[in-house]
Length: 347
Image (cartoon, rainbow, N blue to C red; front, side, top):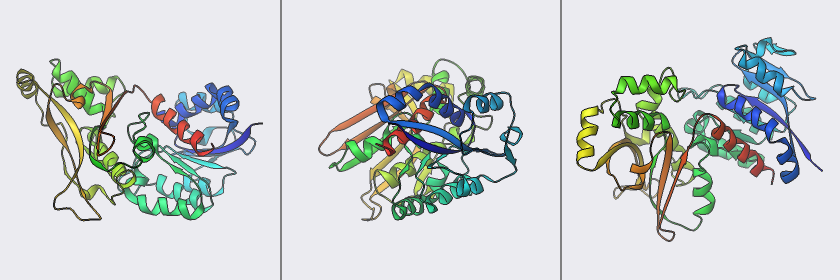
């Protein structure tokens, strides 16, 4: 017997569409191994909403979006309906939130998650904004409602950073966390290491689909800081906002000459997030959080995280150094992390 899970999806960009692709490709496995039948009954993008309690034709919706058209012109759509209204009213069992990151207001994702939790629906997020701005609120709301709130896709995509920290390091005191969390910055630094200048490396990253048209969140360190805030709140259990990450510096001032000079000295520059025990910290906030470029010895694990890769190092008291990295290309791995969260919620 399979359990039909009615899914409401907010956001039909690369990650949202990739998730729909995976629900089609993995449907036999989901049914056979996990007893799940994922049925899309509501979907929203910036143009509107489509609602279909009997199930939306996923292949047709993906083709519609691939042709550059918004949900508002899809059959049966409700043009102009705000996504939070859909989240509050759709016939659904689960909310998936993959709308663009908004660090000023968290919208529309934040209100979508609020609406879902308020009506007792679990939520799976790929969007970092709601968690960075309202982690305590959302986790408390999920606990009050007695439903799951999963967000492993928000930190390094397919690399199960949150799952490792919460589950596999159980019983550990984590002394520090270091990580490379942004593949755009990492790929640019790698290209510069091989002789390109910053502007050319950024332009190529944009052509390759790694970097956004506006890459400022990536190259100025804020995407990395977002992920560090989520790690602090979830794994380290330290209440944190972006204001607690100091400094936040990016890679825009790094030059090819500096990289070449570092190489002669056996050093590699990386954009590194750190959470380290702070001698001047309090019981509530024992870790100091920072993001910035660092010159690492070539044999440092993070120095080996190259190109598209992301990685993390946990220094623990009883499990030693735990070191992980992922070679993640394109949106499929992040969508796969959302699928992982859905499966785990229903097992």
